[in-house]
Length: 386
Image: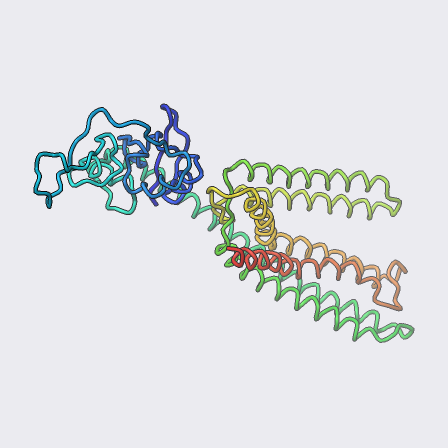
């Protein structure tokens, strides 16, 4: 995509695509007196002299109006006029190069700054063009590698999470067998079968929603006006993670549930911090979260940042799946150990020892479904209002 550098009084004010340039002219951000050049070239042209932008220049309220006749005029003789003295000619200001004339050589020179016409390769300095191409190639390669590495690692973590989910089902089966062996306990088979079905459905939903979510992320661009909103959003996410870690540590010291409760509380805080660090990294990675830098309103940008959080949450789902599944398997194993030892920490008369493991396993499985639904609703509304 061709881009154009705009400068005002010798200072560059930005790089614009054709669409952004037209929007800037209409909004008054770009003035006719500003100068422009296509990226890769060195010759500057007044914005007001580009004939292909004349329609946009007419629509802006900042277009300067001529209040006096030019001191010098050239004459274009009408070929149908019998009078060739010039009295029936139309006066044309030679400084007004925004009008297409057959003899307007400047229009031929500025074809390269309008991407609706073929680029004049002869006007591009070879060294400059090679430098721009090299930078663009490096940037594209880095983005591709970054995205590929992230997706490959996410796929591996997703597999580990699903494996842990099915290990949890096996642990649940052994747990149910020990409860069932106790003649005083009610029949736990129906309860255990419900738990197992929920875990299996959740693990399948996690995989399906994540892959569908990746396609949804790729088809739902988020528009922001610069990198500053992304930096601020990433900082807010990191601050939230630090707050959760500090809160978990403080609550651990205030708990009276023993050493085991303190350890679990601190583990939750550490995992929350790691999750927010990864989420902040995803927010700051436009190549992964499909972020576009363009001119948008404040409302559009605000809704876009909300969607960006949902994107980061959805892309984070393999980490959530693996972490919560690991906690569920570990807590299920601890419950199984206490049940096997019959030390009355887990009662033999019911399935109460499986409540905490089940909670984490269900969070792991259905979290991607919730994030996918949030992003899907945003995408539907965004298309509807556009």
